[in-house]
Length: 178
Image 1 (cartoon, helix red, strand yellow):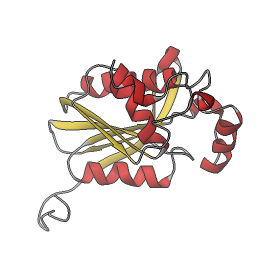
Image 2: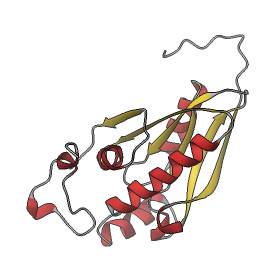
Image 3: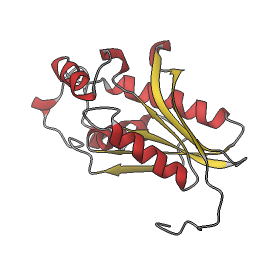
Image 4: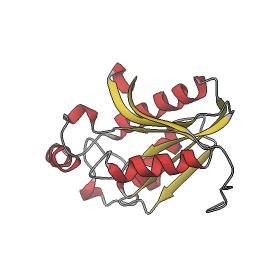
């Protein structure tokens, strides 16, 4: 519940950047947060928006952790190079975006990582907003094992045939029936 934290309750968290093995055995950097208590805690994969893993998504991860969740926010743009979110977003756009297969693979790997943590209760959800919300749909449809799925204002879930590309070969809406 929002704003129901007790004033006398211990609060502590770990927030750090880390790397994990993602799609195609690529190393994916990410932002990871967890409560410092023993748990067990439910977990969330937070899928960032365009321009990428920025201060907003780091803050959202910390807010979820403040309310008792382990969170990983994979940098889906890791393979495009590094720099400021705006610099990396230019590279991502120039190359046609991140492929759905990569997003699904990175999120499957992140889910397995979260479920392997001793302080995880085995429950993992996935949430994203804007382009991250769009990515949630193929992840939820193709990756098995999620306990909750939230698409916040996801753009381009419905796409015309003219908008499809090799990186996004199927409109996410059509994956809902798979």
